[in-house]
Image (cartoon, rainbow, N blue to C red; front, side):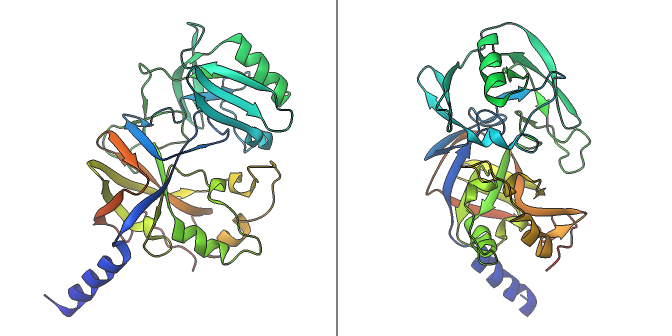
Length: 296
């Protein structure tokens, strides 16, 4: 074994030793409040319930906090009878049954992608339209609707599906990465600004950048690309007030291809249950996951 390889293996062991799942999140209605879980079921298109519902405008285009920061004030919880949505300011609430109340379907646009879905019901449309002060409708993705990941195969060559997420089933972030970012900020921000699905402890800051393959229990995940961040991390998820941070700081050292990056998008090859405390075993490292040179 060459000295270089020996030192590389030592470094790899140090960086990837004892990574553990520390938080799990789902976002049942796209761009509304998330739900923290202790265990989550991995399905064919991501965590169970994650972004299976979505609000759309009169043109059937998705709505998000990018344009409507007040969506952050709509908090979601899972109840026996469906999703309970509460508006934190007015305390108005609505329960969304797990099954849509109509048979009406449509084609809905997420960025440059179009997928099929089902309208939930006029009661939901009227409630959300009133709360957000704009005409909108709530839609659901049934199991029969399959939305392919990365249709142009820029990052994923195999056929995988996702829900109403922006592009991929999962977002992974290391707690060390947020801690390092917060050390650069005057006011620390919480993890919910970045809306991850899986958070882990252990490793160095931005260890997730190079995790090209890893397992949690019997479930295999593959890193696809670093996550380019929009303006949502600048929105306080409790007040819906936007600021310049953390984007301004991230742009100083996490910039490339006219974007700032934080976290990594994932696909998966199997299903099952993962829980907080589970060990993450890294199986493949890719130092140039995106052929991207970040500003340091």
